Length: 258
Length: 98
Image 1 (cartoon, helix red, strand yellow):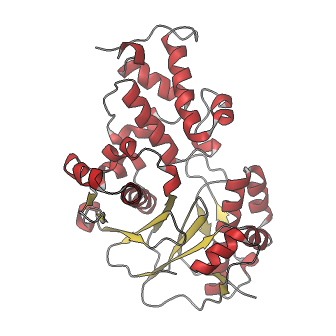
Image 2: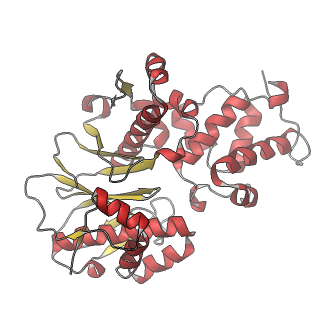
Image 3: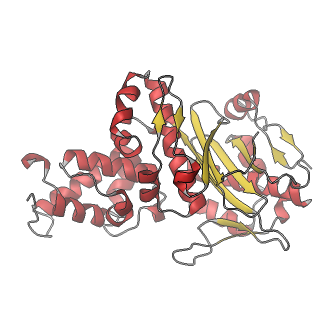
């Protein structure tokens, strides 16, 4: 039984263009170096099929209520999360005890997902957009947030830029080629989203605090950890072309990525 | 002051603002969903995510000459069609008058 999804460039093409599953790898026990980890997978028909068999009845019911693109992303995200956690716990992915609970209404059919295994205080975060899903796990019990986006969703960068970058940054953004400009915008956006998820800050406040800057080469940096109350926002390589990913952990937390 | 509230019967400014909100929503999420959302339905409950909502709000602010809201108030004004219409009618001008 393979437990962990790990997509390479070839796997991306395979998952998108054929029905061959993405390559899978086995995970070991939780890292003891205090690192969090981020894993990504690319949504494709074979992977959706594989992951659907790992879901709980409640997760299958939730997936069935969603429309097809969202349904596939949800299915792969939960399958990936179950595989990562199952590998670390030594459990079959289908037996990993997960539960969702909405902090607003208390509903158990939506909201953030949590691991219910005794003796663990692992924190989880899940994100999906376009063809990419990502899960983040902090094994030290610190909150973690991950967010991914696809460049296809920023048709007009000028609409969002004022919410993410100060006036001094915008001339530099305007000089970037269109693709790099979209990437810069989404890097700041996913940084704000991941910070909001990890810290519990409302997204509107997160957007105001993120203080993103961009250099002449399009590299984006967000506010220093001390400006964000000890949170560390990092862009990580996205697991699929045309996508952007960011992770927020407590300052000083190491990060393992695919 | 740019207040333009004229009533809630759907035939005055409120009705036209609702049509504008649905038009901008449709550009992000498609005509079917934008047209079928109940006025009070929560966007998040329908699977409309944060990037969609912020993009729609920013487009409406530009079109209606609304000063950008304080970011901390984002979800107070942008969680449903009703909330957006109320925000625009209280703080903006309908495009024809902007």
